[in-house]
Length: 97
Image (cartoon, rainbow, N blue to C red):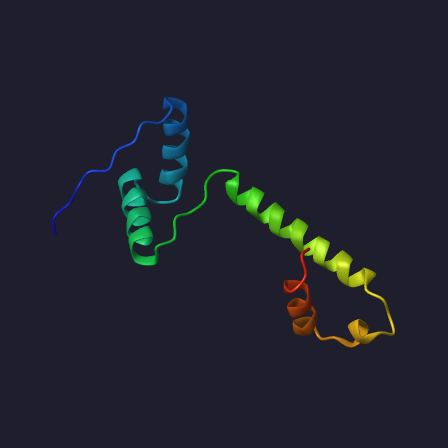
């Protein structure tokens, strides 16, 4: 199997701290990077390491809370009150909310 070298520049302190944690996990930096690259190649999933993932989670949570508030504000004793979750979802999809 042909191999290629992957390299990156990181802050020296970050490297030292990370290397310590990697060693404590029973790996070498080379093994960790190789495993990461193989995982990405096999799954197509790139891990999220910045706060962008947290921002997306926060946006989804805000949307969920908004939907819960809309549902709570629906009139009771009407057709909307007897709709299933899927019925409500379809109704919301047809609205400009």
